[in-house]
Image 1 (cartoon, each protein chain N blue to C red):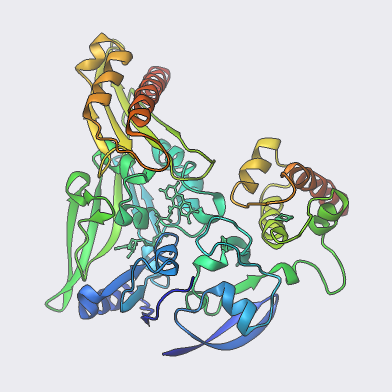
Image 2 (spheres, chains in turn cyan, brown; image 1 turned 180 degrees about the vertical axis):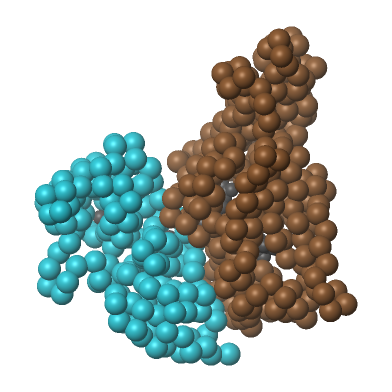
Length: 158
Length: 284
Ligand SMILES: Cc1cc2nc3c(=O)[nH]c(=O)nc-3n(C[C@H](O)[C@H](O)[C@H](O)COP(=O)(O)OP(=O)(O)OC[C@H]3O[C@@H](n4cnc5c(N)ncnc54)[C@H](O)[C@@H]3O)c2cc1C
Ligand code: FES
Ligand code: FES
């Protein structure tokens, strides 16, 4: 059976008709054409499908679209105004925190929420915050640096 | 890796949820945080005909802390309970469960119902002798039963929840005076299920002697292995740790050998019991 649902994605209400088994990750990518959200493992381990649900980072591959009917979703496409980059995105670019970029959307969503809740995290808090996201390229050092750099940029902006 | 098709139900209140569960019976599964169920569906390890999504039953998300302990509703997420800090042992155990992002969705009660022998929260329920409240729809009204940890945790991935039943809350008894607790585990990668873990609770008497000492071990038996080491601890924590090693039933798997797990539990039990005793002495 198909279900008609409304998701508020990056500030815009989107109506879609999906079967109950549609994962939020697939709904975003296939039904809404937002392919910034990546899919790696589909069992919660890699973190590259992480999006913000009412501001909280969650695994979109472990969420059914029908469960979040009516809720607010922010994907990597919505982290900055069109054409611009958010402070977290600028810090990732500046610190060379990505190589192939496959993991990056998940890291950006996770870090955006992390710094909102904790604007000046310690090294340990950064590692704990990043621990659920895997990266096959960078070796993580530059990602951790980028989180601290993003904290500086956000502090300068405010 | 996509989930098999199922019929979806999204009840808005508890009555509706229980009536739906009663109707779908053995063909139905409860969907809470989905952090264990959806991976299993994606991997096609199960194919329930009906999913009853309780995420809209707002009355289930409460966490009530009182002098006797804390009652956690079925929709209370790991992260919410962790932030609430209403029970020191539960808070500590929650920090060992998966990653922060998984904890934003996963529920405490869902973890108990899932009954993974490697999971932390069933061990906490077992060491504290807590309980789970189960509800069902019967003769036009809600009927409930309260099931103690020992009867609730039946076997690997098997709890006492019957078809048609919903676990509505879990109760974690407070630690009480002169009592300390600790949770020690070893995981290959941070956030993974641990190879083995030991959760310990130690109560001291007025003279600072051990009045009661208990552990629950994860990953080394079909359910959390609870061992009372009050007697054994009279000869020191090393003796108590050896007692724990005798009680467990570790198995070989791709992650570790049974012998390594037995060794590990000895080390972790010593650390956890010592840590719990220090906390009990400090908090006296
Ligand atoms: C990458 C990853 C790592 C993880 N690591 C750990 C870890 O280290 N330690 C750990 O303990 N857990 C770990 N988990 C599992 C996580 O804690 C789950 O959130 C938890 O086990 C299940 O809770 P849930 O609310 O997500 O339940 P769901 O996935 O929704 O349900 C799980 C099962 O319980 C049943 N169920 C759920 N709620 C109820 C209810 N109220 N009444 C009756 N039945 C119910 C469901 O029908 C299903 O069979 C991990 C998960 C992932 C994806
Ligand atoms: S695709 Fe969701 S965690 Fe890997
Ligand atoms: S940049 Fe390639 S996986 Fe992270």
